[in-house]
Length: 119
Image (tube, rainbow, N blue to C red):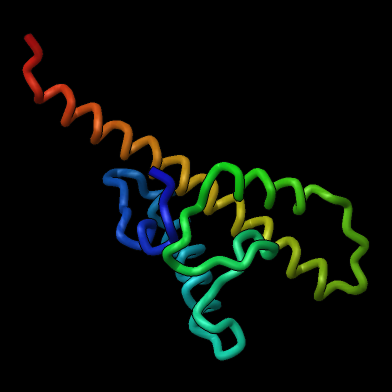
């Protein structure tokens, strides 16, 4: 049930404007990164973990990225600080989208299970 970036591209929760706007923004940014010449079709989850578009975004990966982002960095300049802040924003948004994706998938499974008549 852990989604990949490709799964999230196709995931659009109904009636959730905030999630839709965030997903369009951060997913588009990650896709653009993966299409750049230097990335070889990969993106960096939270700016720290190199991922393929089909790699599952697991809770363990999210925990590792969160740990890395919470370390106190020493910024060399304002450009580096802006890059870290952008990465933290993207990571917060992708976490919210993944959380909602998992919730919706659980609801879909429960709906299918409820259709089955038990004796």
